[in-house]
Length: 476
Ligand code: ADP
Ligand code: GLC
Image (tube, rainbow, N blue to C red; front, side, top):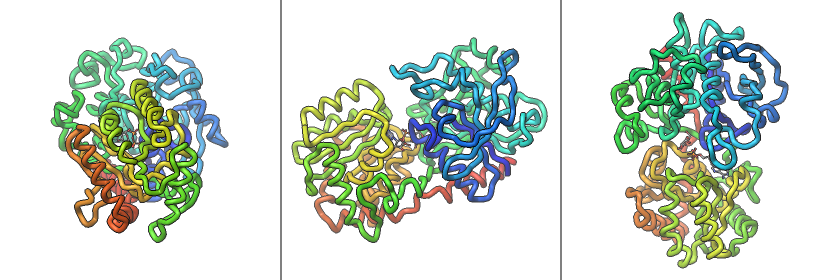
């Protein structure tokens, strides 16, 4: 099967969150299932710099009257998955982020940038493909690719089937309707049964309306997005399309995230010998200026600092935990107010709290290995990857029962428990769950069982990739 996987970020070339990890790993897992899967990504500076042996395979104008862009072909590092790069320097070669500039504002031409990405994806899935390859399936991811199903449906003739994976329904790509013309969309599609959403042109709505199938990244989130509380306005459409909506839990890249081979760590370990994990903890404490203390429960957090992640709830109960001797290593960036509050806490608790505000791949691995307990009190979490990494690294997660967290973490009350789960999105419920985690931490035997349960779980991509493949087959 010829599958085009379209994405706006991909590990190890460019990453802001879990979408990059999924984009790096799922296509490779599909390739291992012997499918002809190829990627399409924007030619950001970071992508052009990191990809070797690129060659131009086509030059064409994406929209009428626009200058020509180039389509480059290369292979992904490590996995060798073929990748097409949309090389339009004027749109993608910018220092700073893929979606935003440094002060946190969206690039004002995002509609055009990702409209182009969507349009090229659609071309590669149609008879008008600019190369000698036409996809059977165009697999779209999040709003940045949401117009691709619209372009395909609006094109006469035989074309690819489409799957729209929703990684986060809160991000919708809603733009002024003036963009319809430059994006070459007919006025007729600006309709409730089309791309229109509360008077805006919505990329995500377009994807949800026109795609053949809609997938979210966990079964629980597939239900949640059909409710008023968590559907962010898309629940009506999703409920109508209920039969086309499913949830497929993300896996993890088991080579990239493996404590037995992880090159970022001070010491490697596996489920046969957890002892070197203590070395990772000590090295982490030393490098972050925390008191070197094996007995102090060390919490890890690696996260975007956003409302979604519930880290304001954690701020409320942390002082009590820190006063009781616990430590915190936090790595994250995002909302400036949260960054500031965490930095203040670090000043108040020298030696107990370390806060690093930046993106740091190596440190994220070192926290995963060196912490005793990983905290993820998300208000909502479509899937979440960090709890999976935590389990794999013998660092049981404390999570709220929502989305993919509910589907992947088993509470320690069960014999096969892998972490600590709480229900209410409030700091008291979180506090109680953390106390339970600390209690277990103080009981070596019990804690080790929870660690091993997590480490032995199958969190790889194989079975989920197979489910995607089965889904593609049902629509072709
Ligand atoms: P989301 O995609 O909502 O941010 P996920 O848990 O699915 O949440 O994935 C987040 C990914 O981004 C993980 O791989 C995590 O380690 C990584 N990450 C988040 N913040 C940082 C950071 N500041 N530095 C390094 N990695 C980070
Ligand atoms: C989104 C979600 C996260 C999910 C990731 C990958 O960023 O917030 O829960 O794990 O996408 O699917």
